[in-house]
Length: 307
Image 1: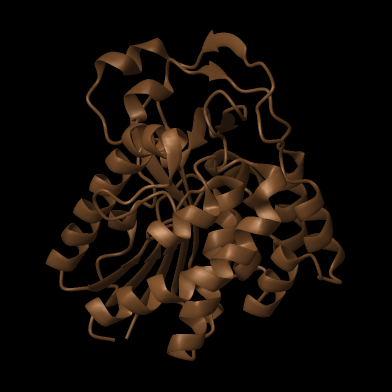
Image 2: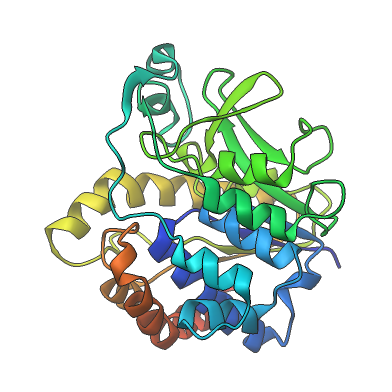
């Protein structure tokens, strides 16, 4: 049986939830996620796919989020988490014509977003630390998803037929949140965060995959949101449209004959995570909360899938 692990975008706080949920999933299935045939990630998901592909296991990731890792690469990576608010971006947009094109998710807005000025060196360092001698990730099924707003195209770097890229280029591209991080040039095209077009791009997994496990912190069941006015805004501006697209993609992959298990935060998860998924100062507290709540979300998703 061919198995894919697909990890969606989610910023700093979403990344903390992903690790907690992934630990619960691995325990329930008695499975090492590094054994997945396909490891596909978008943005924060790409960050974690890079770590898994480079050999780091669940215990390593939990130790990293818990602040008790002895690994120098992981310790520095957490210390270099980007600030909660972006630097003032450059006013020049990437490609204003995208506003008048049809597109998935928030992709039409991507081209008119100002160019981010964030420092992506922390992602480059991580990629270089885990990459193989050829500059790409060691896992043969590693794929990092980014979006090209000019060509209106999602690309899973590492997949057959995708443009050649180093792990550093692909990871920075997948994490290039519009107006936050700068777009990344690869093979003559500019790429931004894959989450601009889809929170997880489940439909990009190969057609011969039998089983897909999806972890998507930026998606939830209808009406599920973080508390407060921030949660209302986050739900209507981000979570609701991202969720609808994710579940449509999951149904598309099921129609191919694959089993798809979508694991998303429930209301208890979001109460602990909050509505600001880039809140650097809340990462440790968010992870502690997710360690308590995420196992229930994982168990529910598995039960619904009959596992």
